[in-house]
Image (cartoon, rainbow over all chains, first blue to last red; front, side, top):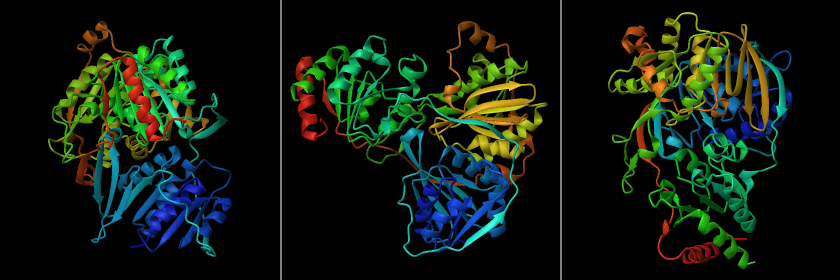
Length: 308
Length: 255
């Protein structure tokens, strides 16, 4: 047992991983890029902070071989990587170089008594939970927000700077902010979601009016944005789109494919309005309204307004 | 391009009492976003006058997926046939795909989808790229090839990052990269004339360690949503709306 190594290009996420790791092992080593990151991470109570240092300002993905080399040299048991776009890539490539197990976006990680590891992850877009075990080295990615960032008052972990070679084959040409319409679905308290059952251009006004009455954001399923182009792609909820946590989700003409429903799994109350009583959405609803949204929605908007 | 033959997630049956999952009656399909990837790969191959090879690793039933991939624009297909009952994790899958890519000649670019409908692990593509020793570019929504240079736009949270690298390269793409048109009758009929090949995994000559899963699945349970499922199906529309609004008000979710 040589302790757990944690890595994220985002120091806040690295501090969260330090908390997760501290619950699993006595020795926790935080690996980071750059001196700035190391300054915040020395206050996490970690056994040590390892700074990978290279000339220039390489992209985080350029450190994959260096990180794998560090794991190998130190005989690390487990590497936790923050599950960001960068972290997914780094985790999988390090696992390939180490020829080791990888568990992507684990929700629960357990150290088993025989020295093996166990982790749980969701499958089928949240439709199932799989538990996997492995022994020997492993890489596990962990999503942001799974743990509180470690902060140990008075702690000052020793910092070790390791000069490494980086892979410069992929060159960054530019980095720009995405053009967005200012919608922040992730923090919306109420969401009205348009599905393919209500996806004629004239139907949007109907959804918009209900959203106005409820003080909700308008969202949609992926085909409404991608295939019909009725709403911008940042408004679609689902596994590859937005994940929302509202008090109220109202699905209009939403069939309820799991790639979509996983995106609002944490909603407090879910309402479905659909003509098809067998719509899969109704299986994950608090209120299943069987009926034509064209008829129900205006009545619902009026009833909500009547309460104001 | 690599694609995966998976169980249709909407057709898995979960026993509400035991949470046991029955996938035996679920239809199989090409992983949803792989359809977008096929289209992106078709366009990319066309732009440089290359052949597009579809590659999949799976049990004998993945053969049906080959026909679908050919209809969607793959020029020829290779199906590495997994041993019956053997479990493949990302480690095994990447080793098998890497071995088969090496057997094909002059591969310039391999496209994988960022995640599959069943696992969505963001794993196979980057692992495969690393095993091939190629540059890896992930989470791509636009790509172009000019000469020996790949240019790609990656989605990185709120930012878009444009990167370049030399070929050969491995790219993982998100569904925004291309639409996934439904193949027309001509494409479906034409698919029957395109070449395809089945390669037993044993023919790849991989060492035992490369085809032995690193992880063991000890439990696989369905997720049962704890929702109330109040059904408002009967009566006039206004009655359903009144019942719904009363319920939502009681739940405290109306402003």
